Amino acid sequence: MAVKTIILLLLLAVLASAQDLSCVGCIGGDKKCVGDTTIQMLEDDDCVPCLKRSGKWTWPCNVEGLCWCWDSSKPKYKPALSSGLEPALTKPCDIFTEEMFDRIAPNAVHPYTYEGLCDTIEMLNERYDEKIFMMGTMQQQKQEWAAFLGHTTHESAQYTAAREALVCARTVEKNSGTFCKPCDNSNFDWENRYCEVSLVANGQFYEEYCDKVITPPYGCVCGPTTEVDSETRAGLMNPNAAYFGRGAIQLSWNANYIKASQVLADSADTLCSQPDLVATEPKYAWGTALWFWMFSSPTGEQSNCHIKALEGSFGSTLRIINGGLECPPDPYGYHAEAVVTRLRYYCIAASIMEVRLMDFDGCEGLGDAFERCVKTGFCPECNEHYGNPTMEPSLAPAPLVPTPRPTDWGSWRSEDWLTEMSRRNSAVQSVSSLFGSLTLAMAVCLWL
Image 1 (tube, helix red, strand yellow):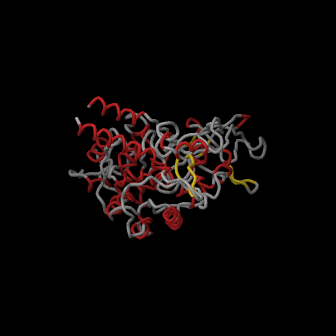
Image 2: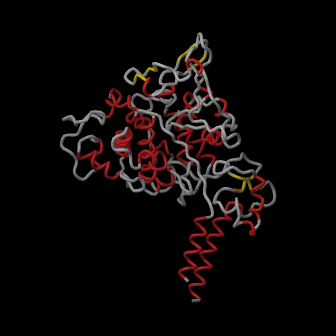
């Protein structure tokens, strides 16, 4: 009985340590215990009780990571979640070279530049102890690169699409301004990527990706958007008035734009007032994807794509990015085809980085989808990663039957599957509670 009591005390001590960790020693000098508004809505003053041990079991101190210790003499950047690994010696862009970039995206367009990607990675890695593409072994670095490249080439149509197609497939330049013509699927000409009937024409409003309840500092102010005017710019809206999908991972929603801006820009208002910077500036086109990779956590989890990739789980990275639609996908919907293209791009990236595929656990149905894709010939790029490659791989996932010969990676630029891209919701709101800690404590008590 004494041994069990000691074990119980140790478990409780671990729980207390985990909950109190963010503000331990946060007293004196310029140190201040502050709140992370990207997790929950709170004020910095709400975190004051976390400085005392008596407050660690109550909100907000009982939500791991919600309060953290900030040295106010430095910029207010919350440390990234730790993988527990040591930083590597080789820099990310010494591993993923410009020649590799050109192979994986031969038709990449501005703002997707190799230089911009490397500069943004360097900026973030200089700021944080947890480094992107620079933790653990060389193998882990390469595997994380492969996962990130597989997802982002899929999300951005091989780095050719900076804006969500239905909202702004084509920009319109008028009177020294850039405008978008938002559309719904039924009025969009996918072959020519043109909107027949605008959603903001004739006094109508566009208000997608806008949660009006959320306001600064928790989200950008947003509201219904209409056409700029009904004469010279009829049916056109100002892209800086909406928070639709943009960038390498299609950042969307007003809450996510302000969170990304808090990390990437000098001001939280930067991407609130100018969200189209994500579609025009390499720092933000790449930076928003890197922000999501490093800082966006699933509800109730202290993890992210960066950590899951280092743990060897591609499936978990997909679950974080788009699990609600692709884990598993509707077998009769668009996302069944989306999983195929995502797998193909991941296999291409893994081949270029010269690593084996990571496991598909963490995303329901992904392993089965991979096996079907290879066996039916729709994932020729994955043959070398599968034990029994098909003899006659296909050209693309868009045709309903496989074609007799494999295709070169660069030929993807001419395939019809690009026209099937549709809008996605990548918003992630992370809310955790004391439930997990209480559950563990109760389980231990019952065991005793």
